[in-house]
Length: 123
Image (cartoon, rainbow, N blue to C red; front, side):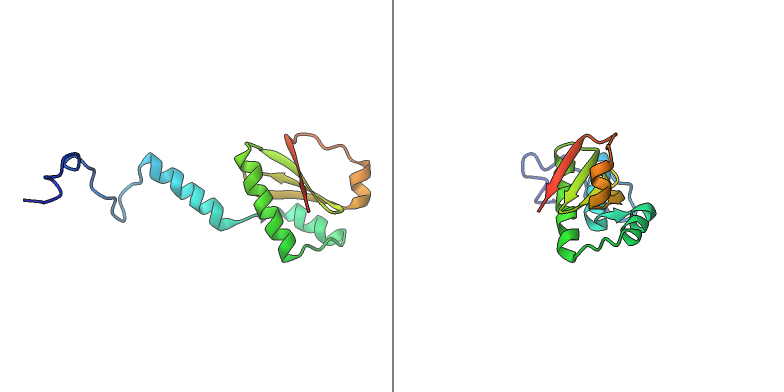
């Protein structure tokens, strides 16, 4: 006799998931969350091009701040956001964890930003 089966409430417990078995709905959600945490922030080709052409360089600390801001914006339900980091603006798809474009100080003064639902000011 299995000693765990004799404990009330454990007799009907589902068997643990084994490698190769399909994930439950809860398991798929966990996998998506884990993957998004591991992937970090992505940079679109357009954003990379803008950073380079405008001479904008970001330190490791800046990238860490952006990653943290991305998580906070997602927790608040943001979908598309404008991140302001000193004299740089970043238009971000929070849902995709992707920086879409980068704007330098001169262009920040002359632009109107649409299709965003939040703004995050970084130090």
